[in-house]
Image (tube, rainbow, N blue to C red):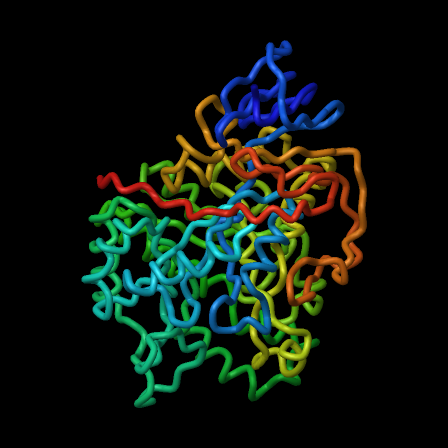
Amino acid sequence: MWDLIIKNGTAVTGSETFPANIYVRDGKIEAISNIPLDGNSTNTIDASGKHVFAGFFDAHTHSRDPGAEHKETFWHSSRAAAMGGVTLMMEMPNVVPSIFNVENFQRQKEHLESKAFVDYALWALCLGDVNNKDIMALSEAGAIGFKFFWGYALKRDTYGLAYSYTPGDPNLIPPLNDGEVLDIFKTVAQTGKVLGIHAENVHIIARLTSQIRECMSDYKNDYAAFLASRPPLTEETIVNTAILFSKLTKTPVHIMHVTSKGTVKLLDEAHRNNISITGETAPHFLYFTDKNGDILGSQIPPVRTQADQDALWDGLRTGALSYVATDHAPHTPEEMKGNIFDVPSGICGIETLVPLMATAVNEKRITMNEMATLLSEAPAKIFGIQERKGFLRVGADADITIMDFNSEKVVDISQFQSVSKVSPFHGFKLKGIPTATIVRGNVVMLDQVLTGIQIGQFCAGKNDRN
């Protein structure tokens, strides 16, 4: 007796495409066969004409929960994930209270599980001397990786991130110097887990922003001025230092939301030198440039030129960039109004990730096999959870996304599951839609309708040290 049979589908992995029937029992894939196997099932999905993938990841999400539930809640964002074909979310640690010690980590783990429609993992926050002593315990508690917002100041009362910093402010801890950052690398290296970097040189950005605000009339529009305040140099200087620190400390490093062709080149060279560093980019960098930057507003880091976008696509195909994630970070429409230098950064992304990458397959920017690598297999390997997640294999969790690459739809933000409805992809024509989202054998979305099953569980990171 099987719990679930997916029959007549075409399985897609990073290296193969083949006819397959998939058999699930007790939340695991128990058999994959190109011929029907004996036995009945309580649930059968006919995947004729469709493609079957290991469940997709979104490895970079900010669900604002707790601390800013008027923007988003995990109940909403995990429903958006289910609707969008995502079976595993990786939540960032800059919530309130931030995830910088085991007590906050455990509280967040329980808080999110009460709301989860899909599985989730938790990043923990690196704050330097404030919590270096807590890093190993956070690793043992199951953190998927460690996030460091390079160059940001901290609020003295909560250790939350301060997005603007004035030297001498008594309420803030100044941004860390490079010696303190190097200690973070050494500390995380002891866990064997990934150190994720928000790579922006805030000192250069602050200087340029101050200068540009005084001469806004010199620029064609506000976005041109905003982009000039955050040139590629602001990303590449941090990435270059991270590569050097990774080489010295043997720390696995991951560069988040890569935007520039220079960074792609740096990552490619680092790979050739066997330095343990990976990178991600996001759909809005792959589909927009500075020519339509006003659509995104103050997105940080910003969308850049066509040459940068072309390099990102090349980086995904060559492996210089390892995967695509959304940086899902909703705000309300009201919060997004105002001066581009002052409004917050962030958009909804999780519900459109998979169909956008499927559209890229139909546009022949990537192949189906590359899509399997970019959205599941590569992040599973990077975070050391490939035995459970990210691969269509016997014994793995039955996390499965079924795709119809012929189905079309137009993005309508009013239909989003998220609390906020801010997305630059509103009105965007998609070709390639998830028709089923299955989490450990439980069908949470079928034919673009949520089933109402709230089944999500915490996914712990690996705990074997280097």
